[in-house]
Image 1 (cartoon, one colour):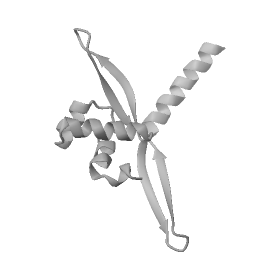
Image 2: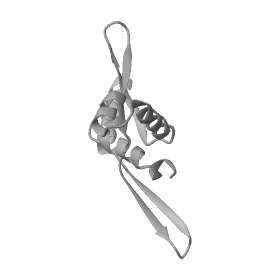
Image 3: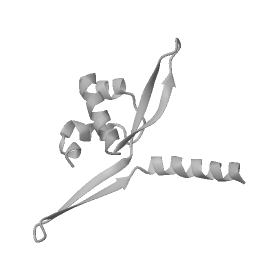
Length: 111
């Protein structure tokens, strides 16, 4: 919940819901320093809200990563009677579709 409490972290999630993006792309799109974007991406990956989608190879041997949000939305509900907070994470459908395609492919390969 601490990570989601940071506005910039939420902006990084929003920027990566529809398409995977690099740190540089997110930095430019949101007008944030690359150092700050790296930190938020690291924190979001650590808690499972963001994931490395793939690596892009650059001529000359370098590479960079593209990241995608694992969630489409997050909802918080506070129950004052119980002093309890519920958090609902709605998965990113694009990620689910990619996983299902991969799973179908793996089942065909195994049979």
